[in-house]
Length: 399
Image (cartoon, rainbow, N blue to C red; front, side):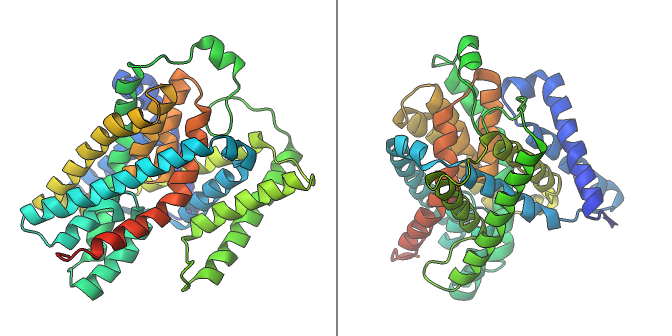
């Protein structure tokens, strides 16, 4: 066992990001199919570590202490970027996309339960390989896994949930780019003139140069730190109540309130340049750490029927993004970017969704609507809707 401490893990994550950029710049396939740089670099390293463990029995263990902090910092930056005036203008699109997302949750659980039954598995395992782990992610999967073991007698449900969520994280980062590439061919994309005159906002163009100052970065760091701490306190206060929410949702919520309160009172103008810069750094490092730390051998231990289930869910996600998300959201460039983002958090997590969309917008141009809608729906509303859909399915007589 080779253990990396926090500093060594940080060094490894930065090397993974640089390696991912090298791969995407040099390999035509990765560039053409809009594979995010952290995904490309992280998966290659995860595969190399799998081979190392298989042939030498040497296992590398990374320190994941910083991973949670980086994820929370990313969600805080989303909150601090959320101007309610902009959200109000995009309210109709948010509402429509929320309905599209709710539809996917029903499809995932229907597909999971149906296939599990056909394959002779406990239908509850179909739910675990459905919206619980794919749209819900590792946190939701771990929470429901414990409930399924205690209440419904599903053996090793927590381990299965984590493996399914890991599978989704990998595939969510891989299919978003190809889906977007297919859809972009059907629409008119922004040209060079649009890219030049329409300044990208927030997370749209992570490699774009930004004019910042030392003091403005310090101000933004203070706002991020306040969002993290107050969000942590809020999550603690809500724990055990009917309003209990995941920690990252509380952090995002505090960021939204802080940003708009300061703006409304004219106390401070939050700088979107600094927020997006620090948010992009946190996002990239979080994804690099998450993907290079993947225990791919856990996926290899899944039984064949579960692999069949997850493969069907992946195909279902791609088809849903193409035939439902893209068409309902307008059959235009924004809809194509939204479809890529939906693949990211429909199978993996919101950070994967942002990375998918960045890979598309860096090549074809900004999409303000997509970066307005996806973070709020994928990071905030989906957990609430998902919990309702899961409980609805558990109330069915055959479960």
